[in-house]
Length: 137
Image (tube, rainbow, N blue to C red; front, side):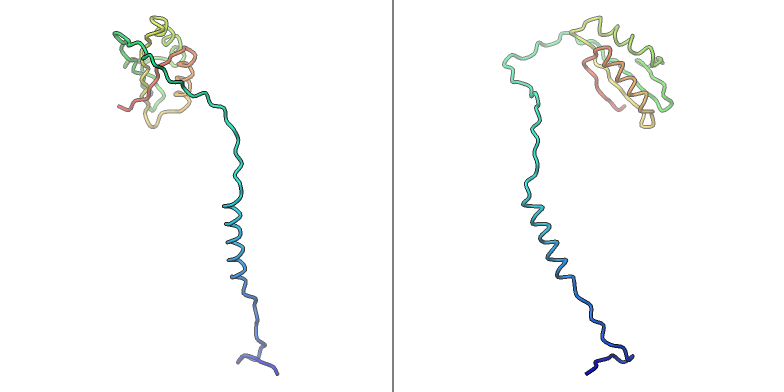
């Protein structure tokens, strides 16, 4: 007996794979949840608790306002300064009193070149500046 549709062709029988795909996805999720996650130990030196408070600084020096504008010009306390001279200027500030350094407050324009900021931070690190902060004015 031949079953055919109205066009005279035989029946098209396709295998329904949706239940198979559902079962496979459920099994995949089960394996992902139950699989052990690899863990790697990382050595971290955490700060230790100190019972003695740090000595208070008397008369902290005025902070240094360093601004970088969109054109890449650097301003040291509102006066233009070349990037190449910044490390010497920072070293002079650190040498005044290494235990009571001024805070370097860096303000950058949102369109400033990141390379200039990287040079400023490298100069501060090379000059051993310990107090560096980012401000937005």
